Image (cartoon, rainbow, N blue to C red; front, top):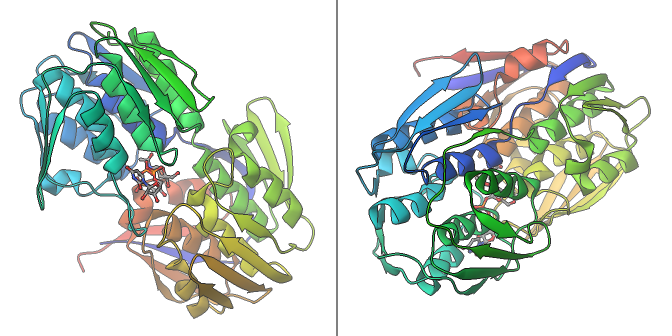
Length: 422
Ligand SMILES: CC(=O)N[C@H]1[C@@H](OP(=O)(O)OP(=O)(O)OC[C@H]2O[C@@H](n3ccc(=O)[nH]c3=O)[C@H](O)[C@@H]2O)O[C@H](CO)[C@@H](O)[C@@H]1O
Ligand SMILES: C=C(OP(=O)(O)O)C(=O)O
């Protein structure tokens, strides 16, 4: 059992290094498995539990993978994939397991999905993925617990997504990339991670146009090559460190953070009283005035990222007045509210909306992370709370943030990661 202990009160000051993006590296590992020859090298890989699970899953289907942690580099040799089964005990531990399906379909003609994990946020359907595979010519057998997808090769078609699904867009691009003919994906996701994946696939030899417009065209090619690619910075990690500076009234330099990738998150934090200044590849963030309340509506990119909704809920607890948060992407993403209320917050949740009445002083206690982002939001609460906050399960935080305790300590925070047998 991993837990985090946080003692609040220190304004954060100094420099933090922003990790590579979890939501880019996972599809890139899936993309690397499309190359039947050579070795793919991924740089700026975040050392997080989801990457460790992705390595285990790639090895389970026959890839040879080396994770060089100190160098933040993955080397992937997918020349001998042998098993189409994504075993439940690994695949159920992270959402990114779903991104291995296109490679299995191209390389082995079938994928057997024993389970897909990921944060517990309410319904997380995969119907757009399966409908897309079917329109490209696959047979999908959806059993109660195992899903079996088979294809003798994909043929281009016009596909659409009811909503611009992030992994759905990535999977359908990968499925179409080695198909016959032209595929058009309408209502495709615009997230920067999707564009980074398109960049890597293009370097591999894929023919993809329209990334970032919502209409993506893929002309199938016969093979894709192994390449070297540097994973983009993680905008969610950057957002969390910016909010850590905001909640403690601190001043930090975020190395590698890209202000443009924050989308509406930047403007909402500015409305709260946070200042950003961009110095090339270093983002300076500070807050030296009282926090103001905020209205937030989550949306797909460039809207307010749902993955930063929990962290900003914590910051809103310290703002003077009522903040309103409307969650539009996931129907079960407010489990954080009752944990923050245990610490002294005043948050009322009604269906997809929450009202946060601040400012309320927070007091440290034992709290539960229900998912990755509620976990990191509780670390932020701990930074602003009086006394000690103990957060379990730390594994959920480790799924998406690398060396969190060390990076927070470098900013003067009292954050410790603890492993115990109970
Ligand atoms: C590994 C990864 O990249 N995870 C991110 C990805 O998850 P993920 O790709 O799973 O999220 P999606 O964009 O697919 O899901 C968004 C919404 O669409 C619905 N939906 C999605 C697919 C589908 O086939 N049918 C359907 O109804 C989902 O139930 C959900 O309500 O995007 C989410 C939304 O930005 C982020 O929170 C996750 O961090
Ligand atoms: C929802 C998240 O991740 P995943 O899709 O991997 O569960 C997240 O990163 O907040």
